[in-house]
Amino acid sequence: MRLANDRVTHPTQTPLSADVNLLLHVNGQALPLTHTGGEFVILKNPVSLTPGPAVVEVIIDGRSFQSPTQLLLADPSTGRVILSAMNLTPSDTRLIVANDRAIA
Image (cartoon, rainbow, N blue to C red):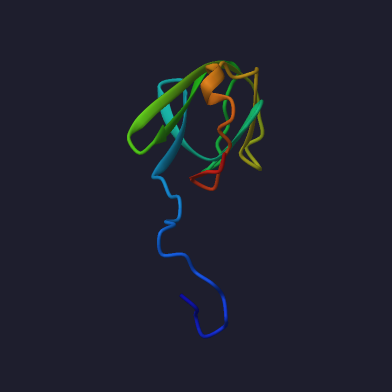
């Protein structure tokens, strides 16, 4: 199938999409995230946090992946939170999440 601007589309290929939620569980709170990375996360709504145990939760299409970690440092002005290395299982380590979308 060709569109007016001469791009080719393939009707048999569907775009990949998933419902993704990111949370940081710390001090009895579940805080929404915008990004996760190897040893950091970014809070959707920056707040001041104290160092201590935390859990990063990634929910993809209702399936929860939790990674216990330690909150080392939080910057309330940017929402960036530095964590100790997250303990994802080997099958989960390829998952990269940004802006509420699973990329990997």
